[in-house]
Image (cartoon, rainbow, N blue to C red; front, side, top):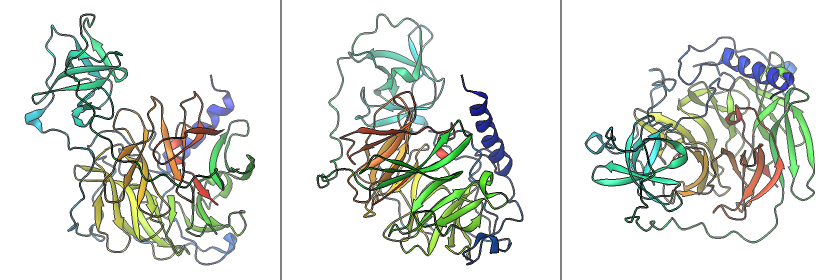
Length: 464
């Protein structure tokens, strides 16, 4: 049971963001009176100017991470007519996840006399008993499907049917209806298709550098920004109520969100040096800031939209609807989650032309993070019912699952040399930071690091 202090912290944070921001399922008009900070280095010198075309808002009040459904959320509207979405003449690259079957190949429902499996949530139907098999379609929550077989371990059910094909569901994600004692082990289990080749092994070497992250201090009732030094194993306190950190390409400055709990009436996106000196407000409100390679521009999320602005707070403009923007470290493409009509997943959008390219088709995909060379991304996905870490090439090819746990894995980020990926997970029963190679190997726990249930509001960053 939580202590009163823990409960109070959670309630205060949730109530604060719920009041300030529209949720994922609602649409609210922009608030007024929020201002960017001009070029003054001292926060106290900032002036108040309402930026067109909309007010940036603090982190989202959505109390759940992105869902696994491919139906776009209602909080992702068509952009205002004054800022039309640029044409998408460039065709989207092929993705690793097949499009769910049409109504002519919808999964068959179970008969009343046969044992059935009813998914607890929308989950994928696989071609075999494991995540190495291709996705044949999607089973909707509560939709019963006739059980016709199982694997030897009893961890997957074979069901009928997707079109003329039998499919497989993960047993832990379904409710069984009827007597399954007579269900036999299936004899038609196919051989798994070859997985995408792993990235070339990075040069051998020990972990190095500093990982910056935020953690919940329940005793003090606050978020705290800290850094972990891989060389010494030491953890250092950097500041309270600062989250969502990202570094510039040269690692000489970093950007983050400062909460009203410590920033008063000036919550928003701040920039500082790695030692926290020179802290200045860029713009009030906003979330998930990410700096361009030159450090002169940044992207940020506000409500259902992604914005681009200069690092002095000027030049604010809407890029388009989306979430979790991450600016490429080598060019002006921004990776993000988005829904355009029925097409949900990860996309990359050019910061200037607005050209969009689709990377994935998962409705629960999010939190993209670029490799240092800008050739790959890691991200979270609910392809198989819970959040796992995946890797994909920037052209949408080579999708590879890196984690495989019946717990939440998220907030991935790369090491400066691209040899490691750090992420958060509650797989041990408590939240902690882990690292692994970009192919999922050499997994190791680094340090306990608790988060709120709103863990998806956080992100981490790694510098030399």
